[in-house]
Image 1: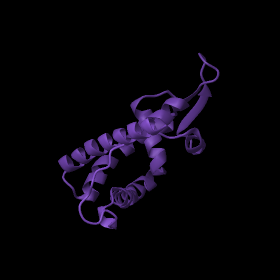
Image 2: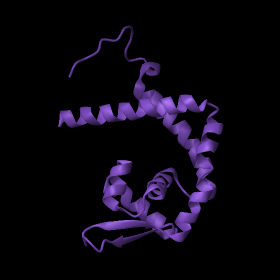
Image 3: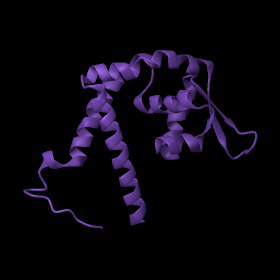
Image 4: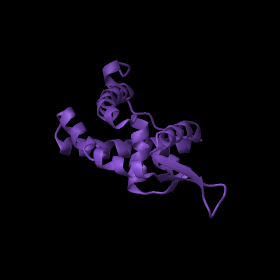
Amino acid sequence: METVELEGNPLLLDRQVCFALAVCNRSVLKIYRRLLEPLGLTHPQYLVMLALWEDSPLSVKQVGGLLQLDSATLSPLLKRLEAGGLIERRRSDDDERSVLVLLTESGTKLRTKALEIPGQVVAALGVDLSVLLELHDVLTRINAAALAAEANVG
């Protein structure tokens, strides 16, 4: 792996990408937490619901792949969503080893309330939508590069 030479002190906290991402992540998730609370969802649960509102049913494996979550993290999320009556898990008729995640009627209805969340997040951030779209694009490219670099190490 090639090393890039940085000018000045490369160990200054405010120059660290990891620090900027961590602080930004906490700040943005705080906004989501406040907005999602009335819906009875945590942010990770919201991500699961977004995946299912886009395409349902999905296998547990597909949900984990979309959200980049391992089964140890995903299983408790699904269990809580199922206990809340928003999803149902059932074995696939085609492959008994595969478990499908389906929206319940309540889970489908919750989508209507959730439609307001993205606009509320943009308004709460007070940043122009074009900046957020550009940020999304940059973060998506960085994530892909990080995943590729991780795959090359192993």
